[in-house]
Image (cartoon, rainbow, N blue to C red):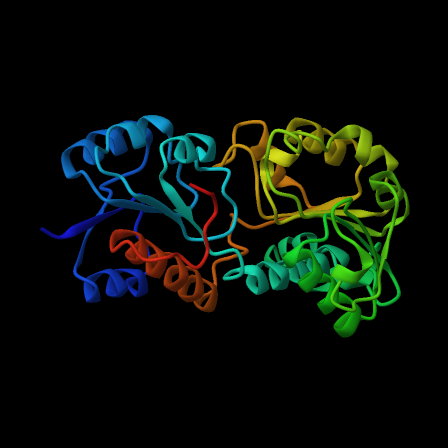
Length: 322
């Protein structure tokens, strides 16, 4: 009898080939949403589940009578009920390094686009105003500017390296869990508080995992600390931000501008859709990790470990201890 994997959404053919080569049967969900997943999981009874950002809930685990593992094609684990998986002795695996460079490059792109007011210029140009450049104000060069990092993990350090070595920026950071020795030789000036970052940086970029201790911890209080023309960047998780306060700060001029790849909820709720009409915001639809290389890296790592779980072999990238 073959092992079975259930995809919560269509995934790369790279993953499918790995499963097929190892005699693991693949089923792709016919749609999205927990209600549909519960119905299909109960019928299909997979040995492992592979997901991207779709939820994998306790109820979904419970309807699978022989679930051995869950794989995340990426690094963030906030869409999986990790505590419940661990309590059920279900091995969760992920790809913590597979998309790091893609996300770091995307952060650089957002930084540059906000510095040059890309959204405003692009709209003006597309509407026939070729000479928008004649009256263009508040565009800046990033060389010599200060990038502030809230969180100094893998992606954050890659982002910092590109900004220091490629753009000539100064970088400061706050992360109570990172020491100078863990900065890979990068000249990041570690500060004693997040407040110092918010108050002194020209660009503030948040790089934190979404968990109860970090959820909704950034809002109007932090935006009011920022310099008059400072820019806020988020390629981490939308749930870190009190999004209604972000929208209000951008509307009222408390926050000069922002570059955003993530939101809460996704897709955008009615209030957050106001961002779409703002010229001081550059928006992308959670695509920071979506490069060919990133998808291949993440799918290869995740699918390989799920095959290992099926066959009782050790995994390379465990996300929990069972």
